[in-house]
Length: 212
Image (cartoon, rainbow, N blue to C red; front, side, top):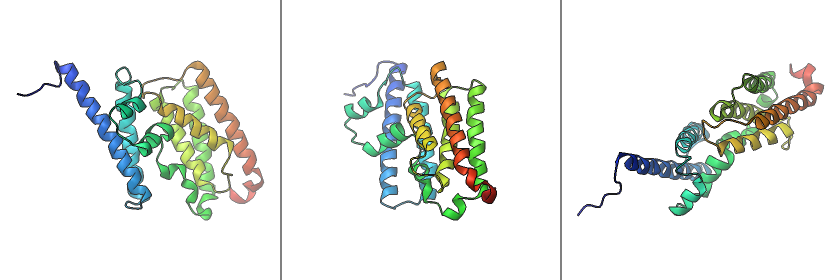
């Protein structure tokens, strides 16, 4: 005798979504381990990781009423996926983005990378000025900014701008894609961007004549 897992179409869709979330978390765990063990290259790892993060955010946004805590979901189904939780929830960006500073110094200090950072700073601030405050609008521009900052080896590891952007991306990664920043959060983020940008330009000032 067959045992039905659902009673109606809505319940069936819920279980299908649970299965999708389970698969994304498990796939991310396997991807992280493959990257750490050097089974796949950075070029293969990064686009796959970005795709899984995007799928995770889209799915968890639609399931926020059903699954308010992904950590509890993982614990309930005894998934044991610490690397996936770190990547999908805590970090929100691929490991290659976090550790971009490994790129050669000759490339890192180029005027093109400095200009790229400036562009991303301005884009992020303009995004908030235009009242584009949904997570799926803010997260990509902050990720682009963080990736650019990681390319500059002349910045210290504890550069305030890098630290603050990483913290904000961590906060956004715990929210749904359709969630919006509150007025207070948007104001604080703009303040952090502005202060980080000014500090960034001040640190570059001695090298401006030679780099730009």
